[in-house]
Length: 437
Image (cartoon, rainbow, N blue to C red; front, side, top):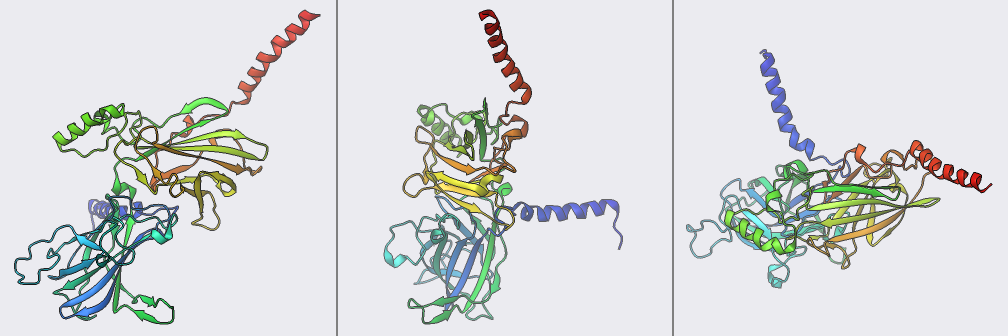
């Protein structure tokens, strides 16, 4: 069978469209980052099984904020959920054919959310009931897990007759995640509390979900501005860094918020209430080269929230810079190096101190957090020339921020300017000396 030139290009185009979401989901700074959803069947019932579903965040610096995760799937047959512990479905569906005992959910495509903190103990299991908030693995591994239990009916009652759910979806809390099909894996092993006995699940399958910023948002959600002690110029965020689709609904001060909320309610829009800026980003990261010492140099980082109706909890900031391999001290933030490749150490994650500044408050006087860091110079590579002192990339909450173009970076005064400045000082001085004599 031969293909025409048009058919050949058509096949190639279709191929690239198929692989594009997966290519965009690959993160060079966190190549193994994903959210793994594990189903462990713990027991069989007369018409189905009881399973524990565990969601583990293996992403180093991307977490799930409030209002939390939403998990969905499609049943392979006509399964129902008899009961749930630690989570609930958002819609029961049509259960009219059942008499007496009514299932928790009869929908073929259930949507599940986490329970809120403080629910009665008989509705809880381990790692549940956090409002769907899941920390990143790099920030807090102990809080990077969420779990719930469900009893499934009208399903298979053995390893041979059970059918795996399909078409998994994950919102965390917005779009961006793409989930694989469920895959049977070796059964999970569990240790008793005293560590002396092992038990295992009757059957286990995994679903892997990866994040793509391209799928999450058409525009960036943050931008970077720059300044330095050696140049009075402040390099601002590029105009419309995050798109200007919200330009007509922005506010210049907190007093205008009620007006914008009323406009959104009348039109049915749910756009964020942003402060009016040239960049129109909810988040701006400012990198200021502050001081230069003999063997060290100092940087100040400020993160500002321009969103009037959103607090960023457990926020993270990732910077990529060649001198992050020699961080001497970080003030008022926690810091963790990111070394995805053993030969490269140029990236690090900053995040707030618990109960101090781990919440970035809404726009206003308190809507910013800041830190300073001291870096030791490597005399073989250190320079202030050609923008070397500024970061290569910045990520906020796992999303890459819009950087200024390289030709806009604050520049180091060149030798010509320095000579001109020296001449402007020396010549008048010589004239004064001559006049004196």
